[in-house]
Amino acid sequence: MRVAQGSDATNVPVISVLNMKGGVGKTTISAHLFRHMVDVLKKSILIIDFDPQFNLTQTLMTQAQYQGYQKNNKTVFSVMEPPSTPTLFTIAKNLGPPPSTDEVMKQLLIWTESKKTALGLVPGDFRMTKYTLVDDPKSLIPVQKRFLEFVEAAKKEYDLIVIDCNPSSSFMSLCALTASSHLLIPVRSDLYSMLGLELLDEFVNGLPAIITKPKQIVLINGGPGNSMSTEFESTLRANSKFGPATLPTILKSSSLLSAKEGRVGCATDKKLPHVNALKRNLTKIAHELKIPLGWEL
Image 1 (tube, helix red, strand yellow):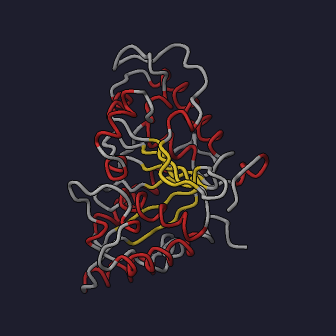
Image 2 (cartoon, one colour):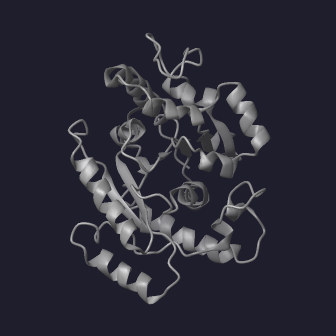
Image 3 (cartoon, one colour):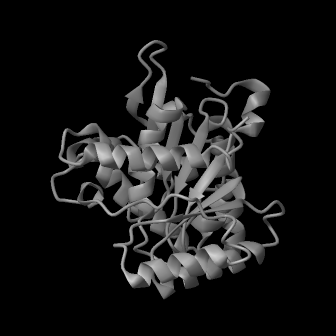
């Protein structure tokens, strides 16, 4: 297990999970794939729930746990602004430095020997919708700077930072993309998913603020194996731009990955039927990610 320290932190990948189309399984991937990657690749990972709907957080924390974290201002909202920020429509004048990861992070996994965090989660917060309501874009510049400082500090403590994003071209998306070295784009086997992929590519390339564009990685999520999904996969892999960026292995459909009321935690941690097949599938994808993330020597 390698933990990023010192100059190594400059090479720590930051990966945003995003598609302009919703319903492509980004939360599923953020919750289950990266948790399994900790076991398979022995990497320390911090996941930031950057979606105001915070479905990822609800997947990984009980309601009681989350309420405690929110009450104590231990969510991503405190990364953006101090807890004392007065109203929903205004930004504090002096934001100050961001909190440390330990101040806002929930430990999900701990390394046995070092007792350090193996998998951490910065919980999401519905109050992040505030940034869609603020009229003055200039007032958001210090907020973005504070978030980027938080990510830079986190890179000194983890081997990978994952940002689970909202499917929209919003201020939050801009923050995440600016911080990111990589972009993981889940797609399903339908026309609209492909359209979301193309729109995201156009959005990223059209942002002058992002000088170095994140490296794109495409993951096909699900697909029942019918003629439509086969045709979609063939079309995607033949695409001159997105084909080479598409991982060889498909994330197969599994009921273990479906969100169910009362089910909290990662699927691979549970003793359920077919969990070994799921682990094998996730293991292949984890190893394939090593190459674009620069972990394959």
